Amino acid sequence: MTQVVKAQRHPRDSLLRSERLPHIWCPGCGIGIVMAAYADAIEASGIPPEKHVCISGIGCTGRVSGYMRLDSFHTTHGRAIAFATGLSLVRPDLEVTVISGDGDICTIGGNHLIHAARRNVDINVIMVNNFNYGMTGGQHGGTTPLGAKTYTSPYGNFEAPFNMPYLVAAAGASFVARWTTLHVRQLINAIKRMMSVEGFAFIEVISPCPPTFGEFNNFPEAIDMMEYFRKYSVVDHNADLSKIDIRLQGEPLVVGNFVDRRRPSYQELVQETIRKASGRGESV
Amino acid sequence: MKILREPINLALFRRPLGRVYVIPERCKECSFCWSFCPMDVLERSDEFNPNGYRYPRVKPGKENDCVNCKMCSLICPELAIYTVEVS
Image (cartoon, rainbow over all chains, first blue to last red):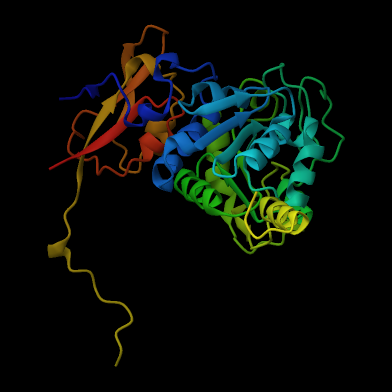
């Protein structure tokens, strides 16, 4: 038997709207890996799927909310965290997860991100970082490395990018991690951990983007970028966050679960204030 | 003397055998599965799916080499491949 067995359904299909597959993402795009890892983490989390909510903004990664067989919402550009903050305040029993791209969460919705981290709102944010605005044709954004070429920076990007784990940890998040689409087992464990964290949990997932970013930056195929991750990734959970910016020029690509600490979450403080103000012992 | 690490008793361990399942219609030929298979079991097949992509198949002669590590299933962006352990 040299052929593989052909199947119609995948074991993870129960959490996905499988009638919509194959999805619209390009061959080799890492968003599918993140979506499958999220589905795996939901199964492993022990929280029933009807208690999970998936929220995303605009962009390639924004499509995740349409493919998950969960309660989901596709918000306007950059406002996924703002919507999630409101939802988690009204329904603290739900496990709210925002999955969106770097253009949505870091660049256009950057202010929502740092203020949600400052307040330590009890939501989970998975940011798929492909270093550019992929869906609109590959413009440079707030995470494009210095010197990287895109459609709108043909001579090399001259705007310094954000160092996302450093930014979010400094703003006050309870859990901060960075993994690549090659570290799938670690990513599933990190997503599982973020679902049990009380407070703001943030994971940056570095993903290939072959047609719009890789083409101009020596990664013409998705496999070239995955090989780069395999060659240069260094797992260091205690890394100095100020030194882990990404240049994609052969420097160590530091990944790991960098921050895992207990801070009072926004929901806890709101409930406490309501109790004090109403002069009663029970929650409102 | 305290033994820090006990040697593995190989008689208690069994090498798992996996069977590869593929959903050809979903494959986009990104080549992740055959590039990152630790046992080098998979390769590109000669057959095309309706979208014109060549999906993976098991290499001839490697039918009993899959150890069900699930790497292909985890790394596939299309949810087009998975393995099941056979006893």
